[in-house]
View 1 (spheres, rainbow, N blue to C red):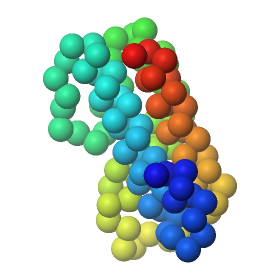
View 2 (cartoon, rainbow, N blue to C red):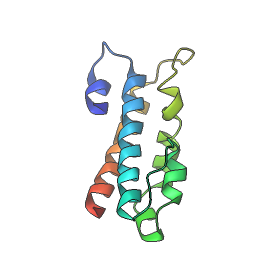
View 3 (spheres, one colour):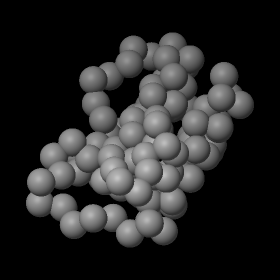
Length: 107
């Protein structure tokens, strides 16, 4: 969905960022679950990453977390947000893609 929205010029780019965050969140939650922990009711990617053992944490790029993490809320409540530049959207979607790929490889 994030990729589709990032390419749809008629739709707000921030929606792609929100869905990129969701994909990354679900990927991290899958890793948390794989590790035997209960899935917490949080959207904070950094908090989810901290729940992982060191070998799984190494799969996650801290820069990707920083890029994606704000979109849990900014994507939900965008009324006062300026539009996101296309290059930034592409970076955010790519960060989520890397995180999903890393989780898939680990699972």
